[in-house]
Image 1 (cartoon, rainbow, N blue to C red):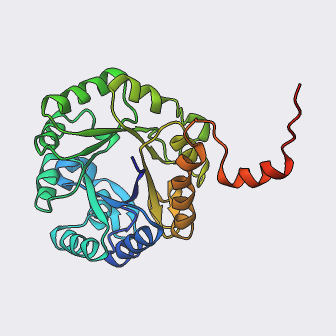
Image 2: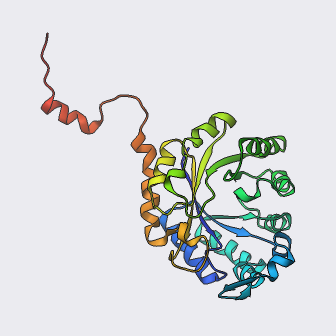
Image 3: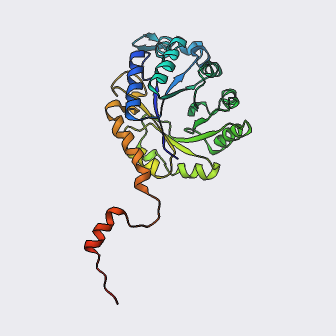
Length: 279
């Protein structure tokens, strides 16, 4: 099975379609299989009190202005859908409420994604599972019992899923990666397990994740880590994307099969250097 690579654009587009398209272009050129966004219904996800609170941002001085400034609507998602189809790259979005999931259904997406923060949102999980669409499920901030409950829900709905090991800190310290959870989750649930990373380092953790069995990798991407936004610092800058993809895709070939054999390249060396001496 080939490694499935997701470039998480999330809200790193900062509400700008030009930036979103640049990120899609770069992900496609680098060889990612898909790009992913985030969708929220602002007045459902956040309380009115919270939205009225103060927050300085490029869009104003309230939480509402900041959240609305980052949010794409129907016309933007229609353009994302058209643009990704034209390029030939898959796209999806992680919904943060039921209405947003219903909004996304009109695009007949190739897969769904459950964000770690949504593992306790049973109505949203049920809505996603009823679609019967392949779903990547991040497991950050979750107990094993909570993961058990989510897996059981998807199994009962007969909805295919792939878990994604995750630590939900931005950026994540490398020593908090706990990558041995990838084979542990695979053994416990008998399913494919990927890795959703938020570390500042470019390759180290992702390479090791593939080495211990990750079947998918999701990484946030950005034009510039210094841009406005809480996810930018834990993202891979676009100039490094091609090298990132080439490196992680080489890992399975480097690991090999575990079967000892003499490679074609070794045969000529053997002919020159192998010394055969009978006892």
